[in-house]
Image 1 (spheres, rainbow, N blue to C red):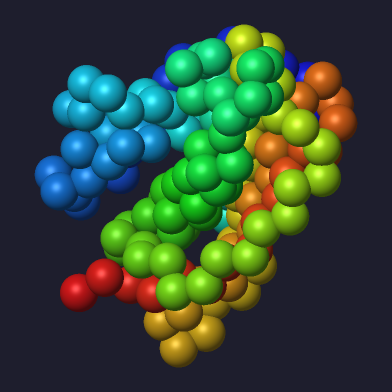
Image 2 (image 1 turned 135 degrees about the vertical axis):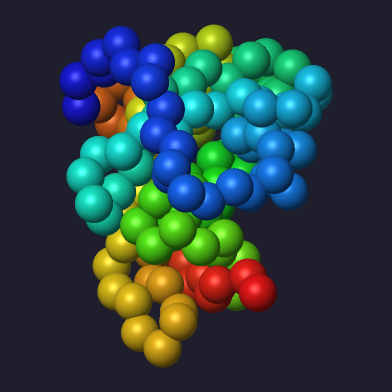
Length: 145
């Protein structure tokens, strides 16, 4: 995993999702949110580089599990939007925490579409830190009306 500076986040031209601006993970108008900026990694994927602050630690120096779950879930939801232009809502979320995720160190989050069938999006996401897989998730998302 190579970390490259990429500050350009994607936005679909013809779709406005103002209700998403307050999202805890990536909302631009949430003053206490994480402020993650996802970018396109191609038609079926998104990625972000991020540093978890110590304020979001469970134990000193280690990210709290709910924050890790938020990162994985948000990457998949953003990927659904990037892929299809619809707001995705989590129907199922399965996570694996493999190693502690350190605070105050850069990490790399990515998500990809595995399959789309009958309006359901089968997704996967992962978090790497220093080229080590720390956590991954699989989810099922459906389009929000």
